[in-house]
Length: 246
Picture 1 (cartoon, rainbow, N blue to C red):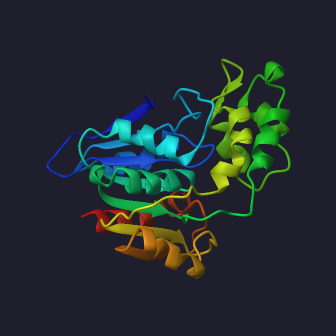
Picture 2: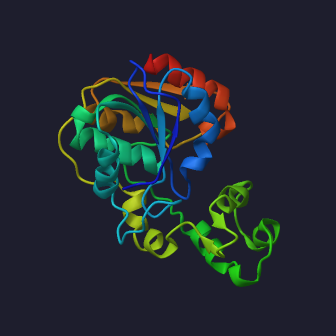
């Protein structure tokens, strides 16, 4: 069972499940989870091979969807970002009865050409046995885009001298992570594809594929935000999500 972090109390409004992206954790969504929990129970998960959740030999989207399904006892609203967004889409297609409304944050049900091996290689280069602080570890995280080092350091267990990420499996399964499985069926429920205005992850060319799987999909953009739209524009993200879910 996935590790979960809960905020708020159950009400007559459906609970909300949040699935983070690659190299992330429930912790990354802490502030937004608390803000969204003013009227409902919010459950953020650590995905498999991330955070405090168990490590497995695979990182496939059907497996991640099954993990999420096991957390849902009665129908929930679901938000998924990036890798978590793909997992949430497969969850909706495999288990449509478990989802009321779906928000997919800055990702499409397609295979991307980029890879995320750079951060994995950077983390593996860190001499964890001889670092005494996060700043020392951060100084060794080289060759990354601005801000990525700070994000990755949130998954460093300094006391245990280890990453809370199964780097070997994430590397071995990278083709599956940047891809999208062959799936059938549709999710007819209300679905919002929410993208960063400055991001190119969800393109007009993807809309036909999205509509074939999610015929009631709507599209929205947050101006001035990139792929990490929930972190870059948290107030706008919260407001848009609240409006759609209610």
